[in-house]
Image (cartoon, rainbow, N blue to C red; front, side, top):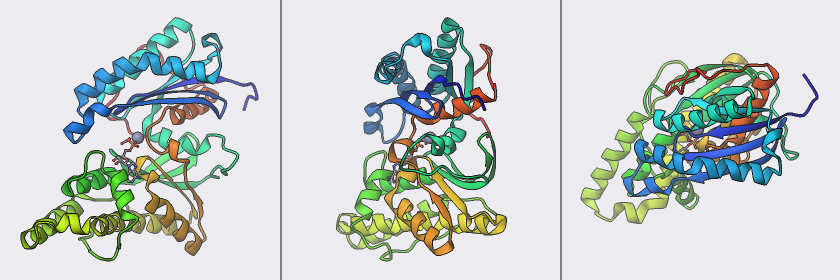
Length: 340
Ligand code: KG4
Ligand code: ZN
């Protein structure tokens, strides 16, 4: 690997966060994200509004990232952007911007898979964290995906199991909606769960073969349970909110860990990482540490700021692709679906 220092601009716009980062090899110099408040009142991301907000945010966000990094635009060696998977209208904004930037500056263009980015967030330099050694298993849990990934090398990974319906993040957000909590409910369930009893209520667990996941049954089970209880006591949710959140969170974590443990045992790989927005969940982080101690795993938990969508993870992936000369060109298009 070349020891020369390279500066990469990373762009992320796959959902509702517009983000830009500058990385020098694996060291983040800046990572700027504009969140979109506009979706809150709709109870979920509205694709058309997300796309419009990205258009407004992209130039100031990139500008800030370059300024914060203290670099000059002429020093940037390549631009890496999220090409997919995600919302097409959102992806188009980052893709078009990155293409124009690369064309204007005459520098290489790198199309990054968002899910690979989540995994490679573990390779961002951090003096307080050890980077994973290969092979390892990464449980990638976000609003759109739930994947058990076998990671053989930085750019050699395989999805071994995934959800057949809802993602883990959706399970959190949809359950939160049933409890009357605003979108995105995942972080709120996390917060209330800290004061609740996780054993107070139990919900149905899916029976899916192999390493795949399913969360739609859990949502239905929660819905019927709440409807039933509210008939007896209309203030059931208000009175039991922390216990409900703790029990729902526990059910989601139990489902996630069952397959994770199975895969680790079957592959005999004791190195386990988590990634994606749901890896910000305090219960998941604690549980991974506990299971890790009990099972003699080496565990890898990403820094909070690199769990939810961010351009730093796209920039670090861009760095590894740059090293491999994995470039694309002006014909590249955004892809709503993009397998690893
Ligand atoms: O990775 P991400 O930012 O976007 C996607 O690529 O989907 O993940 C967003 C998801 C949302 O469903 C959000 O509710 C969930 O991550 N999330 C959490 C927490 N923080 C974010 N879920 C549970 N507990 C959290 N602390
Ligand atoms: Zn994501």
